Image 1 (tube, helix red, strand yellow):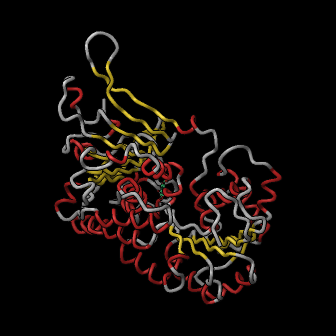
Image 2 (cartoon, rainbow, N blue to C red):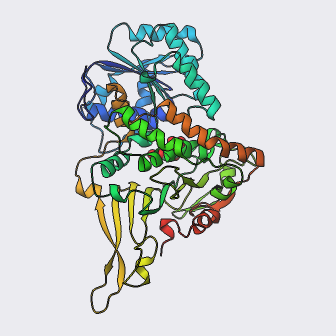
Image 3 (cartoon, rainbow, N blue to C red):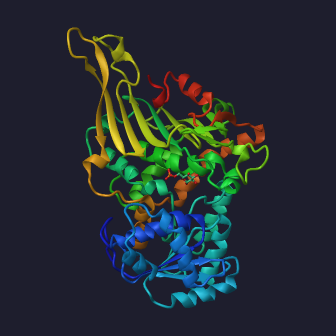
Length: 493
Ligand code: BG6
């Protein structure tokens, strides 16, 4: 059967089973995204949502929890009461302890037989992924079903392999949807459109013309009540291993033959496998770890990472990482990719900056030889935009060059609402579209690449460098770029 294309409503019945139904992710992202899809008429009338969690509730008390906790996270305009009521009618609640396989017959009874596609969304800790999959298999619920695995999928290469092996014995790879919500962002989709829908950039998108590339995902938020989880994770595992390496692979990949899931994922995989391994001394040279101290974000004083609840005393977990990465292939050899992410930074910005080489000879003065005069800035969030920076002549006598910009602000150009990442991804799971989900080999390649860094930090007892909240991270992150004769975009004068 042909799958409906991206925004086409899919009206085949489904059961969406949400493990972790009372959790943070369900509350902030998954249920709001399902509501938005329902409101926009993109869910089949026969689509049911079955929330599962350990808390002893019945459906009506769970619905009261949903009213109270989920509504505040619904983006966009005011909630229409009748639409909200009809959304609630889709929802049932099953209380069960996911670590107790015997309890799963209750779920099986609730789902009944032959009611369309089944999607099991595991918004739980990774320790429950395998027990849940095994229990689903034991009550005969896995055949023809899809399973969605939230990040973090494991803690390192070995633990993620162990989960993937065990889940892979129960579900085929094409039944497994590994979420990286960055892949669902409109702006990230747009990267594909920009690169592969235009002939303009492709000839320049290579080592002959590109001097360096920066990828920044900066957050103003701290650990937001997730201190316990975050302290065992850190920025390298939480952001670099997945979101940043995915962005890098989309920026650096070869044009895929089609937009079929495996055509795109094969090309991303090639990039991940071509990442130059960082080993030993190179890690000290090319990676900066930081941890936030007290400071101010937009005039509000915020505490140090150490003072966040759930964070161990004397913790050396990093809340900031900057790295210099190289892609060892014909297109990119020798071009540095600078990646950076952190919490409690000076702004919430996700952007990619492609710095082109200056002219080889300037008849127009030294300014034309300055690195960074020609650059493409792709702002992913907030306020998605593309800016092309170039040089132009200042009006009047003489020939003085000055930087100018060609700007495209997407929200001014397109009046349509943007679809939230989770909404797009959930609709894709329901419709069976795998292109925006991470294949096992991609995930493995990413873990393999970060593994030596994790190991080096552990064995060398590396300490994160302090930075004040509300700044752009430790000074060492600027020094990393200065050594390559460049600077982070916001440091430009
Ligand atoms: C999540 C991380 O994957 O991404 C969080 O676990 C982080 O720590 C979040 O805050 C950032 O996502 P976004 O969409 O707000 O940029």
